[in-house]
Length: 332
Image 1 (spheres, rainbow, N blue to C red):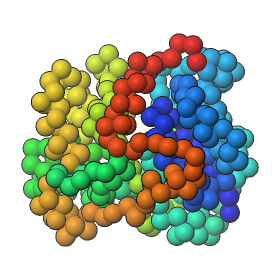
Image 2: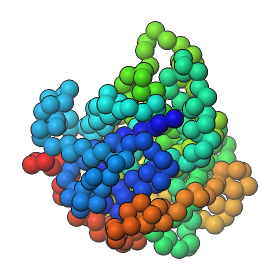
Image 3: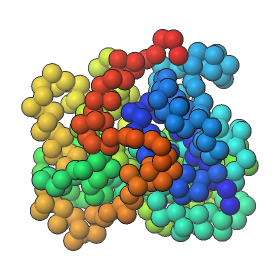
Image 4: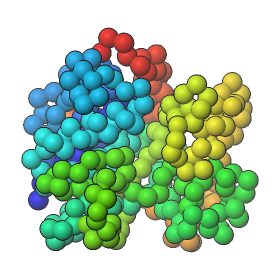
């Protein structure tokens, strides 16, 4: 069984290399890597790799796209790129995922996909979310544990564990909890951010299934600066992009409203993206905490042995700062 992934990336080189190396090592058929802005350093490392198709989303690319020009909403750009990859893929299944999302539990997932009857067009794979335990060392940006979402939107344990910061979490996670989809390439379905767009005349349960385990690791911000930058993109000109769950809206709006208050933002990150040792213990007892079992630095060395990258939080923050001024490229 052949599987592809498609992503639109505008990240520090080290972050994107981890994403690419991980999935190449898993045996991906092809990674459709759409560069939302120039990254010569990354292209020099990965161009020519048989598993990686680099697509430079420059002015010419967008002029020839279905939109005719570069959409201002990054989510629209992601969907257009995903549909383009779907139309060209020669794989059996394709997943539209972001550069901070890693397929895991791969053997069970791909065996499950291979067993699906022809009428099943899409399979949802659910996610866990990376979290740091305060006081524990962070040797690189891929370290840390993972929170498993609670089974209900408002779980009675959430306010007891997180107090007033529970308003920033849905099902106990700061990002999304409803997973990403693997879709049959032969279906030709449009690929939205989390699901394939199913035909209106079908019953969802008849054509879409669910993988019974967790199969996506969501890092949701490699560092505090990376997380804050991600939230700022969701609030262009002070208005939160819709749709998002209420917890994500609360995060993004607070980041905007307190954008000049570093102490406030430090406190927000400390309580939304970090947990105490006691909170970690409670989550483990509730079955809501796990580890990744993925050694990303080792995978980069294996897949890109000539690449020398610094995965420390400080180095990734410095690289992020270098690219922030090019958020909306004018000559790419």
